[in-house]
Image 1 (tube, protein in one colour):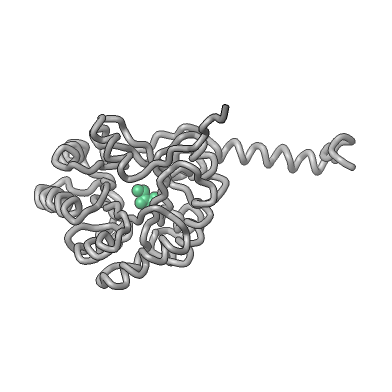
Image 2 (tube, protein in one colour; image 1 turned 90 degrees about the vertical axis):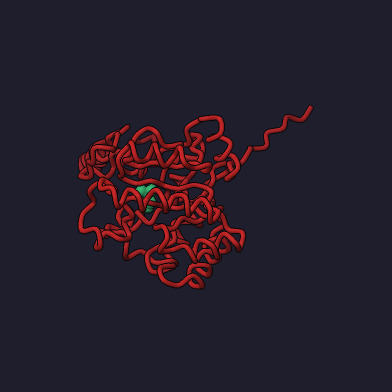
Amino acid sequence: MSVNKEIKKITTHTLQSLKMQAIPISMLTAYDFSMAKILDAAGIEVLLVGDSASNVMAGHETTLPITLDQMIYHAQSVVRGVQRALVVVDLPFGAYQGNSRRALNSAIRIMKESGAHAVKLEGGSEIEESVRRIVKSGIPVMGHLGLTPQSIYQFGTYTVRAKEDLEAEKLRSDALLLEKLGCFSIVLEKIPAKLAGEVTKSLHIPTIGIGAGNNTDGQVLVTHDLLGITKEFQPRFLRRYRELFTDIHDAVQEYISDVKERSFPNSEEQY
Ligand code: KIV
């Protein structure tokens, strides 16, 4: 008797169905093959090839420097490690703003060259034309509102967004607009929990929060933050599940001392 071991892939429809059943959605960032493989095997539903790769992988201060080619390279590596998760890729700064044709071309390059399943763009009414065009071409789009790091020099700081009525009102209407344009989900970053809950209730599509409280349809974190690899970054919303900076640091110090003492390799670790 043959056992059907086919893996049921996560799609945008799965996420919609999780929202309908009030089952929270789990999402994490991934930028390389090995990490993607671990996260996928652990059962994560969505992997975001975030432009936070600019900070975490390349050491830049902001997400602005990362290029479309570099995002495609990261996305290709992640896709090769994934069997089940939905892979979403950030359109980087400069690949879509102010030009919907460029936006569509960037999204098409990501899908064609990496094999990813969807793209994510930051912003609301400002990127309406781009979102409309990309969705119309058949590419699933995830929105991103609230603290949108590609606009950091306009914001000036990484503090909580939409605390004032005017900005909260714009965020509410941007969320409805993105849903109307056909986005399958929206990330809400660093906004008051109450506002995130209201927006989530007003939408049919799922919201995924980061620093947006517990009333969104799902949660996302940067994997290197959750694992304690990025040691200095300690915002209030972050829960660290491990302290890998320390674990890796200590393991490497043990290795160095074994090498210095000639206790590595031993007689069983050689040919
Ligand atoms: O780039 C990224 O990691 C993100 C998440 C913080 C949502 O956009």
